[in-house]
Length: 91
Image (cartoon, rainbow, N blue to C red; front, side, top):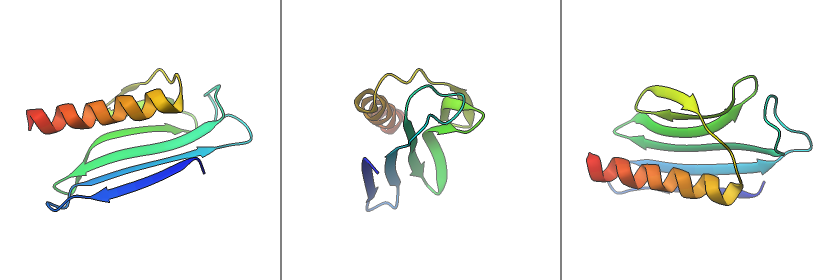
């Protein structure tokens, strides 16, 4: 495991990031990382980044799913935190 971070805010919102290095890419990804980053507000996942087998790198945002262009673990975390901060400002 490369990183595991979990934070529960006083209002019960949850932010969790888990990244593993894997011996082989998770198809159809070409990088050697498996990851799951999630932000849950009011008991509902509002933001999620993951690379599920068969789906590849993708983002869940407010019920919608779209492809994600994985560049690096650092960029992944930066993109995720930026989306969480944006969502907090807007809600």
